[in-house]
Amino acid sequence: MADEGLRDELREFVTERDWAQFHSPENLAKSISIEAAELLECFQWSADADDSRVHAELADVLTYCLLLADRLGVEPVDLVRAKLAVTREKYPIDKARGRSTKYDQL
Image (spheres, rainbow, N blue to C red):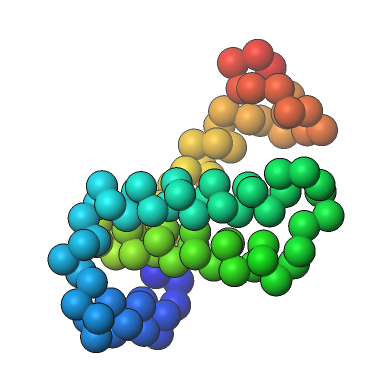
């Protein structure tokens, strides 16, 4: 994780509650999806979402993502950087700048 202290804090939180038994990769992935849906719900009827609710739901999504990365033994920062390198190749600046077109349509 980007912050060793945060990783340790999350591990301690989970251990204190004996929740690791429930944190299979499958369950964590499901939880990410569920929390992401709750985040999206903040914007369901209006772009003017309540900031505190958005922050809380985003924190839930990020927490489950960090827990899954830890469970898989991967560093989130490394994953993001590796994916960013692939995405840079798919979306070269000269073709993608200012466009939302999918890479295979550029």
